Amino acid sequence: MKQRILRSLRTAGLLNAAERANFLFVNRKQRRKNMLFGQANPGFVVPPEALAYDAYSWLDWENYRKSGTDTAALLSQIASRHLSENHPLRVLEWGCGPARVIRHISAAFGAKTEVYGSDYNEDTIKWCSKSIPGVNFTLNGLEPPLPFDSGIFDFVYSISVFTHLSESVSRAWIEELIRITHSGSILVVTMQGDAYLEKLLPDEVEVYRSRGIVLRGNVTEGSRIFSAFHSREYLTTKLFQNLEVLEFIPSPSLGQDIWVLRKP
Image (cartoon, rainbow, N blue to C red; front, side, top):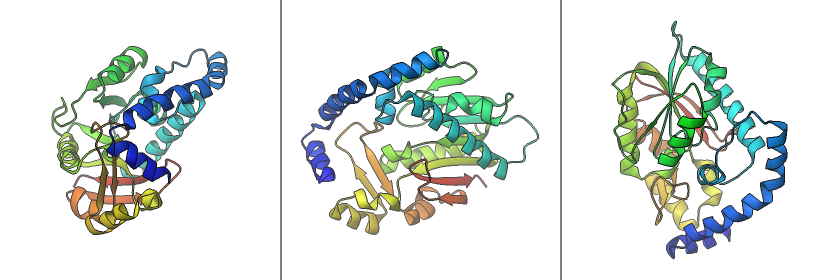
């Protein structure tokens, strides 16, 4: 029922209005809890509520901190399994949002790690640049390129970004991420795969099984409410065809499938 209501709102062009109303509801619901978190953690800078909701659909500062540290630790473990570099790593988060994960990367990977973050939201990058030290932030467009030389990154990760892009734009970005990494570099991305079948409507399930990709649009591409679902076969034979798949971790606590890839 919920998915049918959301489809009706999307089709009618009312999903953005519904999101604005939900933001006000969530903000009010979390106000006391977040106030107590701020009092207990006065040195922990949190993003503006609107930026956080736009990126995550929730406003829970305790979860913002804990999920960020946990994800940074998970990424560090992945890097340790697949990289044997004898120099400080150069790490990029493409689609960093308001710094939930990237602010913890230096602590997880080591203080000498060079950390870079990019995002297409100008307000997000302005806040990150002002509020999060030790990270090189840059603005990117909805489509490539990134303002980096070829082959400079050892480790690139992207959390729930391809899940909000069209097929052609996703393919362009995969090629761009391949460009800015070198042979042997690791790329980690998350996707909405088979675990999301129960959230798809019957006609969407049919498309998912036949084409391997389902898009929910009629909203701004790149926004959280533009949603993309990809089958495992589609990813291995099309989107990731020029990369080596090292690990596939289905539906972990992160909430999406994790793909660990290597540039040949």
